Amino acid sequence: MSTMQTSQEQEKEKAQTSPPESAEPGPKTRRSRRGLKASVAVALMAVTGGAIVATDPFEARTPAASTEDSIPTGTATVTKGTLSARTQENGTLGYMGSYDVVNKANGTVTGLPAQGEVIRHGKPLYRVDGKPVYLLKGSAPAYRELSREMEGPDVRQLNAALVGLGYATKSQIDPDSDYFGWQTYYALKELQEKLGLKETGKLPLGQAVFLPVTELRVTKTEAVNGTPAAPGRTIVQGTSTKREVSIELSASQQAKLAVGDKVTITLPDGKTTDGKVSKIGKVATQGKDKTTIDVKIQPTDPKATGSLDKAPVQVSIVSDTAKNVLMVPVDSLLALSGGGYAVEAVRPGGTRKLIPVETGLFDDDTGKVQVTGDGLAVGQKIVVPG
Image (cartoon, rainbow, N blue to C red):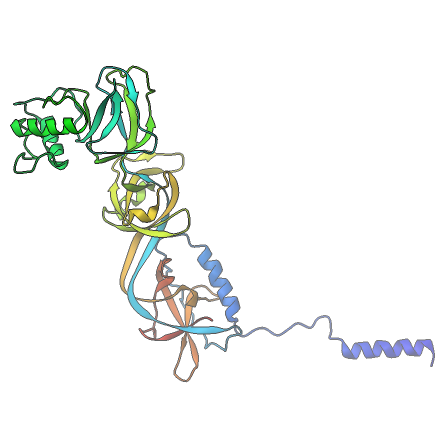
């Protein structure tokens, strides 16, 4: 056998076993679930927060019956109930209120609280010339000496403070009374005795500081021991001991939020705890990118928030609610090649059928979405990833 003959035979054999270069696989008749899930993932990634509504996604289309899946699947049930759409906002976890302790006494600063220390109602806050200046609960600042037969709002808060501290009963002193009577005199003498002060039954200007808290958490001391305690000087700064989250909310969302609305707070360690809206600002602030209002959140369980101050958190706020609606798991949605969505219903006997659906609210917390569609009913089984 010649070399030329051998070469020709090899070429012939190669031509018989190799497919022509122009051959292409035939067109697919249906998309696999893997392809559908990839499409719906892309579609859902394009959605950012809030209520999501697909408008007329199945115009002039009728999906064909589904074939068996190429990946493991399970089933879920179509249910009816309430869904909530939420927005995620960045917030700061800290303590409620900010207070400046303004000195009214003359003398030299001889004692200061430590940063982080908590001073309770009726206890010494700092010292001037060795004498304690104590904290009393009240919203009006001290501006004069108080003594018998005087009247006014400052007397009223002194009466309320003495009753609150237990130095008098409500039958002895009406906490709403603005009159400095004998019972106020005796109760004040008891407080002065307790603190080691001269028992005068009078409240000299500078002996007490009135603040609208029963506990003051010290954040900063402005004075130094040994320096003059000049009247009008800020000695201490502090907050209350109540936990609070502050968020800067877009002013456009103000109408969607109300005091008492429930929220979910995600803490720096990833744990979550419930809260509610306690205050909504009425004055907008113009920032670089948007106009915002200040919103305060009160944790339902303050102990669950720990003791971190000025810590970054995330707040999930309900922005819309849909009641008494059909809902399915978000991952049961199938994106159709021409647009829109469908779910794959399981019929009696195990056969399956695609049902076109229109989507409404997406609830990120439950992983469910509101749907409507002909042939969709409560209790119906639909296909979900296994």
